Amino acid sequence: MAVTLKEVAELAGVSRSAVSRTFTDGASVSDKTRRKVEKAATKLGYSPNILARGLTTRRTKLVGLVSNNFHNPIFLEVFDQFTRKLQERGLRPLLVNLSDEIDPENSVRLLRQYSVDGVVVASSTLPPGFSKAFKDAGMPVVNSFGRYSAAPEFHVVGIDNVECGRMAAREFSNRGYRRVAFLGGPDTATSTQDRFKGFAEEAARHPQLEVGFSYAEAYSFEAGRAEMQRLLQRGNPAEAYFCGDDVLSIGALSAIAEAGLKVPGDIGVIGLNDMEMAGWQNINLTTIHQPVQQIINSSVELIVSMLEDPARYPEARLFPCRVVERGTLKPAPQSDPRSG
Image (tube, rainbow, N blue to C red):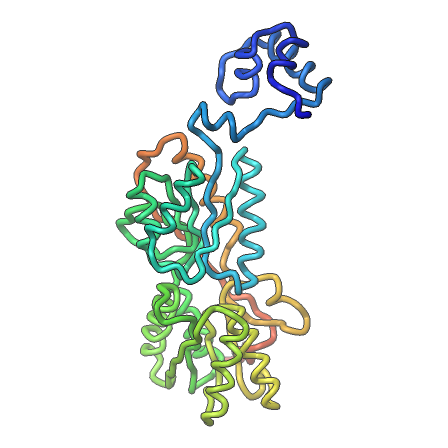
């Protein structure tokens, strides 16, 4: 039988309301009473029923952690870090899988059923309409890894995907490639659209670059592999590919190896994210590092502040990226120190 609040109150010699206040954040209770209650609770093995308390305080401390791409290993890292950070702040994450969901209102109804205090949309592929629907329903919301806007309707934390595309094109130009291509995720994803936009814009500044593009069906290993297989079977592949995500890159590397081609000797590849797997010795992927930890820390900071001040004005926070040099692009030519 679970120990009740009444039993703790009797052992501590205080009222039941005093026990309740002791275990309610921000409630007024004297140090003497708190010590007596905590001593009695420890002796009896009492733990407060947080969900039941939420019915009284109307605060469940549940935060919906929403995503839709569970095929991408990067989100194992994202979910691990998000759940840790939320729990450190006394919040409880409720993981919600919105794969194949197209109606934001269904998601709003689902999260309302759990009376969440706030929502973190951890996705670069869910349309912005999902985050807006949560906000319009009165839920504090942060879109992590979302699309940047100079005048956001809700909090957005992420990277400049357009600039990442420019970075990839500059790397190709600096390393002497000529026939290059973008291999993106779904063309409906804003991250795909922005990464290709930056890639094409920067490539246009380098007349020697001949640019192609194609899209995989999803941000997944299987989709990246299938699209690279199609490109190789078509013949005359590009000299180097900017895959709009590490997991696409790893799928592409698998197809290239199966075709008997070498990386970077025959085909170069650069990814985006710098997930843990990208650094494994048998993969050794040159990629663009996305500062996932900083994005998550900032997102948690914002959701906590919104729980205290729901009217906080929306802001967009961008974090810079950088190229991580490994082994899937040929090195840039070294300048002759005697020149100039």
